[in-house]
Image (cartoon, rainbow, N blue to C red; front, side, top):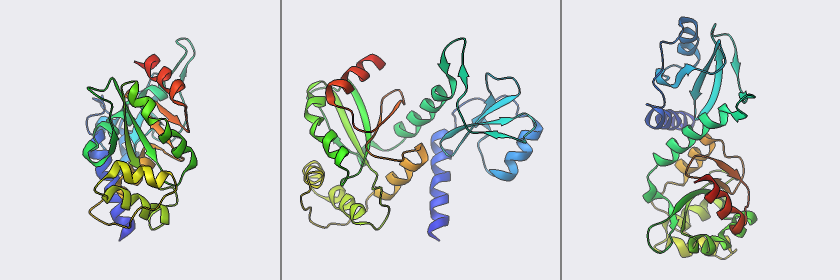
Length: 242
């Protein structure tokens, strides 16, 4: 039952957030026949010709893949334009990632905002028991001072039912979410609380995007930064991406 619910949730995310990802040309019949079998219910607009002749780009479960025109081969890797010195796969993946992030209800995130209108926003998949997440959290005031809003999504790496998972739920369900998550990240005790929380769906969203460790930072353009980045360096990266 849980496995079925998880598959349903992932499929819903893909259909909702990727529904209009690209206006696809007519899909070659052999590709369509293959996808109809291996990915029933896929969105046809997620298939389009790639820059490589005979290779089609396919967005499935939040990831960018490639499929041969005869439908026989799936390629999981980066397509690099050597002439233009560009990673075409990363460009496509950024579009997918930011569509997923922007499609998620920000009211379900724990947000630390600067005074006034934010200049930039970063979204962070975090684990309340992760030391590097704690290090990044200490940098949040500096980021806020620079006009950067930090939005947290829960990603308890130990999985559902773990002590970290329950701490994440307690922090989110707390009346003062900012204080609770700060206490948890400092190793303090947060009173056990439960509510209709989004921790599981945020964990699933992270896996869909490809999060494997914490913290994982998502910039406004969809660029993914894995691991801890000091505030001064992060501010420069964000300004350079703008």
